[in-house]
Image (cartoon, rainbow, N blue to C red; front, side):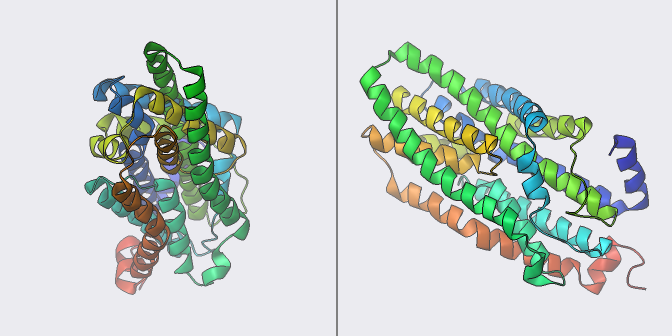
Length: 352
């Protein structure tokens, strides 16, 4: 699909234009609220100032979207095929709009309270809830794609925590100097931001292409291909969102939850980065937030750091409620958008 093809489709179907804008809004919010997790340790340990860390994250996010999507777009394809929205173009696009609105609402609410939540899992939950509101219900959900999401959820937390702790114990034996730890943290933060772009950028590319396919009356059965212009667009919007910063989330993860020394910070960057790299190469959609936060907890615990269990529990509860909470929001909004009055607003002429 070329850019001119998209403009032609939007001219004939304005709701597709609304869908595309909502996808880009979610990408912006993701860069704003999720990407700060990648730089939480490098800021909290004083290696980089907040502004310099944000600039580093924005640049590496941009590269991550472009490079990894060109190499392996399996993550995008998994999100693209997570649910079947049916052959009714009007109903399918309105449900997709509902899912995207639910994701934005959930992410902004979590940011307001400074809690790092996963837009990746909010995305899956919102799409699933919206698809359940359509005729067909549970039959609209693709079990294979959902299985990969659940596997990624378990691995991102378990592997992130274990590898973060393992790296901390290895660093204890190697006893690197403080300057070496600081340089390692710079590289680790860049790698984490790169892999955030690789993971989350792909997910939203999949949603963008799903919207275009639904507008044509297709869906998960269509051939999957990511055009270069779309990679550039999503990468640029994610970088812009990252540049807006997320200071509250950095303070929660890197300072309130656990007090990190440079050695623990380096271990957390290495642990989270290795977890994300392995899962991305395996084509599993995982959460940058979950992987990095789990790695921070693993490194902090292994290093004997003071873990604020109350803050950690608050973060864990937010993770736990993301699937049912955002899924319910998606379901309710999709049901609302399918009402006759809403259909008349979204799709003029459909109720007469």
